[in-house]
Length: 204
Image (cartoon, rainbow, N blue to C red; front, side, top):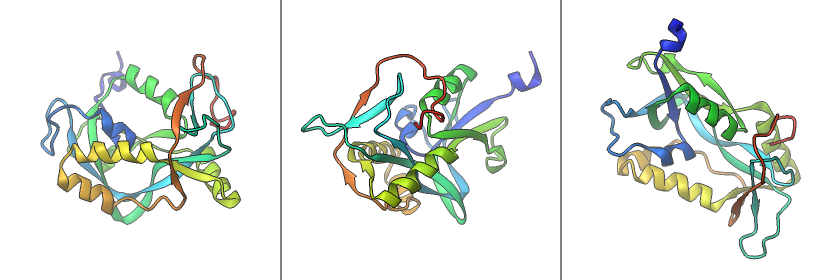
């Protein structure tokens, strides 16, 4: 096995993935990971999916009352460089198999190694940042006035940071830009089927 394959791998989560936080995680490093900061970035609502397009195995959203599928670009959290800002989140150990699953789930994002921002950890520290197609969909949605954020998505992220303690929830609030679009009730659904071939090509 190569040295690269043997190297430790970590995932820094700053949004919905924080909901998968291991029990008892703190700012003290343990085998389960730690609460950590990513300096030089800020949290924004920078990517969006086109809710009109169905991709096998991927999600879409409906009105929880009528069941109608609105023609929206649904936005999600992203990070972008900001020299004076810091994003808090969790760093957890991750396997290659787990990363493969996440690469399929996090279709709006690309995975990059930001180990230089985490000097106390050895090995790769992977972070999902918005891919250009997803960021373009956010801008297009804004231009046509059809961008929205699912209320349950925001609530889930906020609950996850509440679970890290009052200090981390305050840090989340301070480091997160406003959505800049309506926040509405949407119910998530899943398109039947297996893994899609190329979510970027299909406009996920």
